[in-house]
Each structure stands twice: as C-alpha cells, then as structure tokens.
Image (cartoon, rainbow, N blue to C red):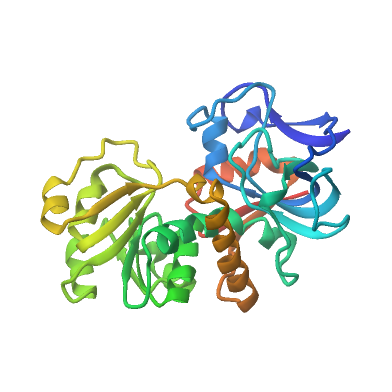
Length: 329
C-alpha cells in the first residue's frame, strides 16, 4: 500500500485526502516512479474545483508533475533502470496518471532523465512551465533574435519560463503586472521591462519600449478586458497566443486591431506539444540543453510536505507568488 492523494468529490482544498492505496504494476508502456517531489499547478486546483477541461471519476487521483526514482518498468519499456533519477512531463490525463502520492505510473515517453545537478524539487518544477512556454514561443510563434514578447501573469511559473527562454533565443521580454510592487522582483527574475497595467498605459509604454513598432508576440493566460489593449500593443503581423481564461470576464474581440495589423489570435494548449512526438522531442532537447547550461533554472516559491497538501493548494490559490509551489514526499 502507498500513500496516495485522492478526491471523492469536487470542492475546496479540504477534499484532498491522503489514503492508503494499492498501486498496480505499470502497464507495458509505463514507468513506475517512487515520487520524491511534486510540482503543484493551477490546473490541479481547477480540476479539484470542477473548473477544468476534464471530468473526475471518483475517487480520483490528480497531479501532473513529479520527480523521483524508477521502481520498475513495463514490459515494452527500455532505456530506464531501477533507481535512476527521473522527472515527468505532464501527461494528457490529470487523473489516470496522477502524480500526487508516494508512487505513480506514468507513460514512458514522458519520463526524462533530467540533468544530475537538479534537485528533485527543482526537477518537479521543470516540465509544465518550460514545455508550455517553449511550445508557444519557439515552436509556434518562432520567437527569435530582435523580437519583443509581452507576457501577462508574469509572476507565474510559465511567466518566469518565458523570461528565460526568450533570453536564450535573443528576444526582449515585456512583463505585465497589476501594480509596481513586483517590478524589481520581475526584473531580477529576468524580465527586460515591466509594465504595471494598473498604474501605466500599456499601449503607450510598449510603443515607447519598442520604438513604435509594437510587440510581435504576446503570451496571455488571462483574457477578459485586457485583451484589447494587448492587441493594440502588437506589431503588424504579430501573433497572440491565448492559453487560459483567468479573468472570468467576457473577452471582447478586437476587430479593428486584428484587421488593421493583420494579427493572428490563436488558442494554445500544452497538449499540442505533448501529443506530437516530434514536437515533444524538440522540446525535450531544447529544455535539457537549457537546464544543463544553466540558462533555464526553475524557481521555487515555497515547499510543503505531502501531509500538508491541502495547505499547498490553499497557498497557491491565495498568493500571487513568484515561482513554483512544490510538495516533497
């Protein structure tokens, strides 16, 4: 029996229960991992709250990210040995391959031998943020030397990943935040410029920063009323990738900006990369190289023990922290 986090109903953090569960042997294409650390994501909070794309079948496991050591492998799996340190690229099913707990079975194609210099806590905080950011910026927007990119919700783990990946490819980052309170922290984390949208005019500042040309790329998980000023801040022929709906308010369609600047507005999902073997291989190569060189370095906001999994969720919900929340096992 292993200690596994499950939910028996939707609700607040109190529905997360640690239970003794018999974890089966891995399927033929899976690897079983003894989990040492878990990365906590807003997607899991949304799943728990019944606000996610996937429905739960109770009792349900949950969790996307983890790092640990190989326990055993399925019959068709090669290339992994017992005891090897590995981390998990989030799979396409938050429940079937849930990582919250002492043991997890995960698809072998999503298991990575991460650089040895990473701690388990750091390794558990790698793949969701960097694959999400890489897929949008490099794979789809073709971000490169001389480009400007606007990133909203910039203090999130994905936002920090954007800073680092943009710098790797020679682009300039314009981070947005509501107030100036986090300005210096975001600069210290790697943003080139910070715009406090509650205190400054976003369009005017972006045009000032870009010498009037606007930003070619925007990565936004917010939507809502900020959508229009974002498109007004873009360069002709630019692309905006929308990967969330944090605002909760209606998102107006910026018709005149789209027409006048020939903009591309694209809904973007992390699963677009994970479900494509070739794109996933490119993502792995880029991210592992960045981790090895030190150009990519996950930032951890706070760690909690497994027994405090409810507190970890509450902290993520109530704090606009800079970096990743991690649970140690």
